[in-house]
Amino acid sequence: MATVPSVSYSITVRLEVPAGGKAVSQLTHAVESAGGVVTALDVTNAGHEKLRIDVTCAARDTDHAQAIVDQLEAVESVVIHKVSDRTFLMHLGGKIEMQSKVPLRNRDELSMAYTPGVARVSMAIARNKEDARRLTIKRNTVAVVTDGSAVLGLGNIGPEAALPVMEGKAALFKRFAGIDAWPICLDTQDVDEIVRTVQLLAPGFGGINLEDIGAPRCFEVERRLRELLDIPVFHDDQHGTAICVLAALTNALRVVDKKLEDVRITMAGAGAAGNAVLRLLLAAGARNVIVCDYRGAVCRTRDDLDDSLRWIAEHTNAEGYSGDLRGAVKGADVFVGVSAPGILTGDDIAAMAPGAVVFALANPEPEVSPDEAREHCAVVATGRSDYPNQINNVLAFPGVFRGLLDAQATEVTEEMLLAAARALAAVVTTEELGPNYIIPSVFHPDVAGAVAAAVRESAGGRARGFTEA
Image (cartoon, rainbow, N blue to C red; front, side, top):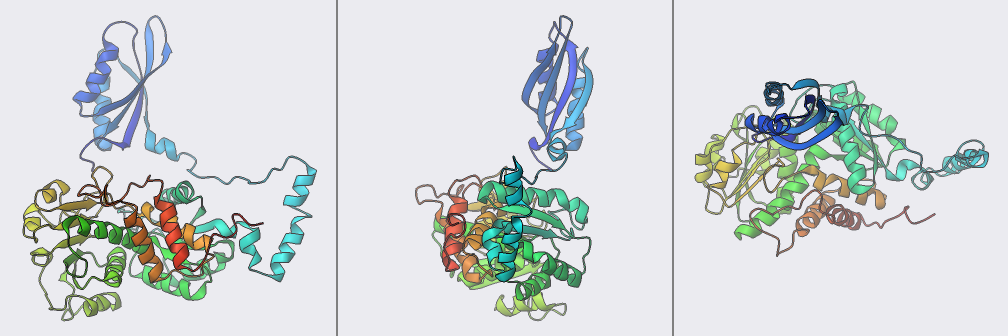
């Protein structure tokens, strides 16, 4: 639940009021008295006796939106005609579409774009499959693949319910990196079926972005697809999150004048995101890490270790701490949460080392209240847009895929992820760096280009295809 009115719960109320009197001014007062925020008030029809007005306002959640409507309806002589949820309106009919890049105005253009001219292009590709990257959409197209099993913070809601999220992902690819992405929502959660289906679809795409597939199945899906395909496979929930966390932590440690190899890090969450964040932090030089899940610290003496947890136990927690999260946080320099809401308090953060860094990334409700954490530590980051230092995967995945596609890469390597994180961190200049600015805005114009260039260089490639015939 949002703590303040948010555009995510924005509504437009169409109503009628008498043309004279105080009714119009009372509308704004009614919204504000209900705790809402008026963002627009438009007269859509005016007469001598009646005015038709659209009042647009932000609410905290759906119940609050209804309370605002009730308050408006209570204004004397107001008649409510229609209430529209602006978020649902944005999604009507979907958020993306396919457009032709070439004109089809006459018979000549049709004969080149389609039959008979297209046959020559098809035969050229039949002789050399690699020409598909140059002569088709493959060179700039990504499949956004999900089974709907771990969608946002909503859980296993299925492929149809996942589609609006995947559409949004595709829209972000286009907006921030000029990449044409398409949602592929699979009606199966069987690993073999997912892998085989993506393998069969792969010839039409230059890359695969796995999204919102639950752990531990996501690990096997990614591993097998990487072995089978000659195009890059990237699980954004894992590696996009890891890139952003490493970039933000790099800058946060600059703020507090500490080094990654020297700090003690406590993590909450050993799922897809937690596993990937841990691996990238270790690859970047972190040495002292304890990972906790719902049972407490992951250590070698636990009797419930699957392959993923066993790897964590073997590469972290050298002293064998076996207690709970609160004990693991005590004295730590850094807390990174990719887990569940409200599992720590301000008192827990107060017990951390001086100059502590807290990344509470559970969304929409973080592991600890950011306001409480801020009272006891030096730097706070969340996954939310209503606090400074938002850790948002859109900072990573568009640039990563732009670099992969431009380099015609066939795989994603650890060095590429490290390069992306370094480039993202470097977007924040020394002059800009501070406790409330350790990671750039998602709308910063340099983000995608910087990340793409770093990934492209790491892949040993150059920008190809977009300037060549």
